[in-house]
Length: 237
Image (cartoon, rainbow, N blue to C red; front, side, top):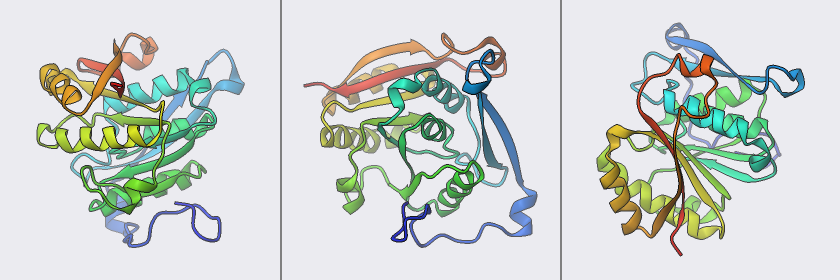
């Protein structure tokens, strides 16, 4: 978050994850973006990944694809307010910040280790993003204070038990800012019929649905697997 003194940082309550044991389980991965023919357009994001955390501190294919989409559409993101849901390692949100968006990175408020890691990754990349704990389906003060123009979510549709909480949160945030949009990447394992049903239930509609690999550079696509879709979702008004 932006603290009272104007510095970047996370909400209070974080714990120290800098122990030697933690460091031994961490690795830093590099992710490059931009047109290789234009050196001024190329940038790299460093991500701290951990082998100790079950899934929240690992860069999954959906995250790489969504981050690439943001990079290729940088003019759309520059100058906008962006919020990443279930950010984990936060690659898409960090790319959005790099291309000029005002970014808030969120993950479950109970996952303190993940939130701490998000802040470390922001610091590592010298990017000033707000980092907040946001639990889907929980209507706290933070939820009412957020007014993002673009919501991002990479592989947030992995647990069907959480789908209702996710879509209710997305619907609320889209309602808070007229004209806002939710852009998400997900594996087809999630089940299109259930997703379509919940979009209808929460008053949402899909404006765009594309194969996640259709816009990926061949060298990046070759290192990824799965049947991944990218969807742009808005309120069905």
